[in-house]
Amino acid sequence: MKTPIFAFILSIIACLSARAELKWEQTAVELHPAATDKQAVGHFKYQNTGKTPVHFKSVHPSCGCTTAQTQKELVQPGDKGEITATFNIGDRTGTQIKTVTVETDEAANQKTVLTLKAVIPQQLDISPAFVFWKQGEKPDPKQISVKVGKDFTVKHIKVTSSTPNFQTKVEDTGKGEFKIDVTPQDTNKLVASMLTIQPEDSQKTFYATARITNAPVAPVAPVVPGGPTAPARPTAPTDQTH
Amino acid sequence: MAALALLPAAGEAIYFRDKISWRSAIPPSESVTVEQAHAWGENAIWIDARPDDEFARDHVPGALSLNEDRWNELLPQFLAVWSPGKKIVVYCSSLSCNASREVARRLRKEAQLPDVLVLEGGWEAWLKQR
Image (cartoon, rainbow over all chains, first blue to last red; front, top):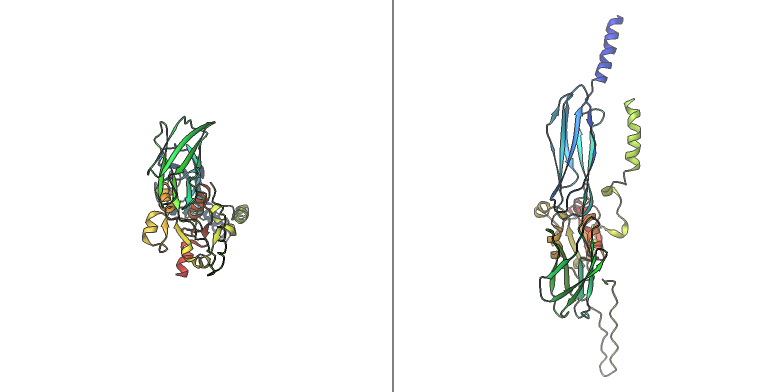
C-alpha cells in the first residue's frame, strides 16, 4: 500500500522538477552604431537548461522599425540559440530603446522582454530646423544654430538654398558651433526653400527649411461713413520667434 | 515556492507600469481627444506617425505622413503646409506605440513649433469615432 503512494508522490515531484527553462545570457543589449549605419543588430543568446523542450509561441517587436528572428521554433533541452533583433534606424536620432517580447510555453516564465538600446551618434544638432517669416513681415535675418556632436570634428560646413529666394551666411563661432543667418529676398510671396547643410568630409547631409507663410488674418475695425476712421486694432504678437 | 518567487516581479511590474515610456501618461497639455481635435476643423493639421505601409492602408482623411523612418524627406512636406495658428494633431497606433510622442517631441524641439499635441487613444480612438 505504501509503495504505490510513495511512487505516486515521487512521480509528482518528478513532474514538478521536469520543467522547461530558457536561460538568457542577457536580456538587454546596448549598441553604438556608426553615424552612417542603416541598422543596429542585437543578438540575444539563450540556452534551454530544463528537461523538456521549449516552444517559441510568439516573438513580437515593439515597433515596425524592429524585426526579430528566431533560429528555431523548438529548443531541445541543452540546446542553445539566439534571437536576432534588427532595428532599422531610418532618420532617428539620439538614444532609441526598442523591445522584443518573447512568449514561450514555459510554465514559470512565459514572457520575456528583450531590450535593445541603440545610441545613435548625431554629427550635427540643428536648431531650429525651421525658420519662417509671415507674409509682409520685415525680411530680417533669422539664425539657425549648428552644434557639432561631441564625438565629431567638423571644421567647415557648406549651406546651400534650393531656391534663390533665401540667402545664407555661415559663421564659425568656434567651440564646435556654427551660426547660419538666413535672409529672405522679400516676404511678399509665399515661397519655401530647403537648406542643405553639408559638413566637410562627411557622407551625411542635413537639412533645414526656410519659408514665407500665410499671415494670420487680423480683425479689421469697421469704417463709419462721414466720420473719422477708427484706428485699426494692432495685430496680436505671436510667440513665433526664432 | 514558485508563486513566492513571482511576488517581487509582480510588485515591480505594478510599480513600474508607468515608467515604460509608451505607457507613461501624456501630460494633458500635450494631448488632445478625438472630439477636441474634430472641433478645431480646418484649424488642425493631422499627422500620421505610423510606418508608410500602415498609412497607405488607411489614415485620417487629409492627414500627412510624418514618421521617423523618412523624417528628413517628409518633414519639409509637412512644413510646406503648416502656417501660424494651426494646431498639429499627431497620432499612431495606440497599441504599445511611442511613434506619435517621438514625432511630437521632434516637432517641438527641432522645428520649434507650438501647439503640437498627441491624439489620445491614437488611430484606434479615431476609428471608433468614425
